[in-house]
Amino acid sequence: MVMKRLIVVGGDAAGMSAASQARKRVPAGRLEIVAFERGNHASYSACGIPYWIGGTVEARDDLIVRTPGEFRDNQDIDLRVRHEVVAIDLHARTVTVRSDADESTLGFDHLMIATGATPVSPPWADVDFGGVFGVQTLDDGDRLASWLTPEVRRAVVIGGGYIGVEMAEALINRGLDVTLLERGDQPMSTVDPDMGALVRDAMVRLGIDVRTGAEVTGLTGAGGRVTGVTTEAGEVPADVVVLGLGVRPNTLLARSAGLPVGEHGGLLTDLRMRVPGHEGVWAAGDCVETRHLITGQYVHLPLGTHANKQGRVAGINIGGGYATFPGAIGTAVTKVCDLEVARTGLRERDATAAGFDFVTATVETTNRAGYFPGSAPMHVKLLAERRTGRLLGAQIVGRSEAAKRIDALAVALWSGMSVEEMTALDLGYAPPFAPVWDPVLIAARKAAEEVLAADR
Ligand SMILES: Cc1cc2nc3c(=O)[nH]c(=O)nc-3n(C[C@H](O)[C@H](O)[C@H](O)COP(=O)(O)OP(=O)(O)OC[C@H]3O[C@@H](n4cnc5c(N)ncnc54)[C@H](O)[C@@H]3O)c2cc1C
Image (cartoon, protein in one colour):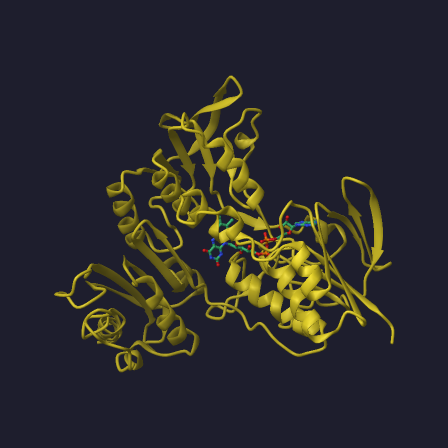
């Protein structure tokens, strides 16, 4: 029996899911698995970083799912941290790896590319003083945590996406004065502006100074430390700056090797996560583009949920099994203190860009029976296709168990239900959990009325 070798580039969600699944199917005597991770940590939850910085998660090491030692002892996977793959030769089927100690070349039968994403960092963020942080990796989190000494009082978060919003919460929970600067009209552009306005109001009530339409032009520093953020409207003083400006697929290595990327710069794969035209080359996670099941177009959806699923699919296939990743519909949840925000499917601008004619319906109701302790307002917005009434998208802003209702809406969307069909869904009811008409049903009823009214 010939021993084969799988090389994994990137030791986090997608890469190590693939490695684990491949190992489940093929024993160590038949497949050697070597994973290279350039950072100090592998297999950890980046999603947990804001909650550790904010103090909800006490111990940083709780974010580490599995150590290299555990991979070696339990699964015979040779995971090497502080090892960067610097070149791929597809013709020779080798990778070149650099560590502190040396540079070496290793052959592969299967190559799993799981290099993740790179944070967007404008030229003005390239400064030679301290106190400016991204939060992409646990190493970034470590650097930020050690900067947050008691004399650091004023924080500025640049970018109002979900990472910016989660970091604003984390820093306010640590007792800092927090300003959030967002270029757009509202924070949380992952939902429509009317729903983003609700997020903004809640953030302001928490004491976060939210400034929208704020275009950052530079950073100022003195004595080796950041002192402020310059915007077109003036300077905002800062002892620490956190960047949350989005991410792009990290594909420089793959592109240099000649692998194809799509419109958004992510690697293109088939349903089994193979890179087409390159036998034995696989890719998954934040470095790939994913097919959006509602529009049929390729998009970049850098989320842990997809990275884990795609990595698992690749690993099953590498191990000789059969699995596919059909695509995604853009479901995501987040929170800012007790305000929960969720979405699935298309926002208004996505539906318009895709060419849909659609109606919208927004309802304000409560998460529980109105008389039940803990009852709080909840907004649900639905988009439905005109004529057919097919659900195209949903957004929720509310408190206490509001956000996870998006899962019911995601299933309805995934299965192509119309809002009329949804009005009859058999959803659970008891006063501690929902009003007698669940917010999902109330929203579906209103959307069904709008669909009828649009063609009357
Ligand atoms: C603060 C934060 C909060 C988040 N919250 C959520 C959330 O709530 N829900 C959600 O679904 N997603 C969330 N995400 C996104 C989620 O963490 C990512 O989608 C997920 O980690 C992607 O997994 P990945 O394996 O594709 O990439 P990554 O986790 O980025 O791992 C890629 C790894 O590859 C390594 N690497 C890159 N190039 C090389 C090379 N040449 N050689 C060796 N190693 C290399 C990198 O160091 C990195 O460790 C969050 C992300 C962040 C940063």
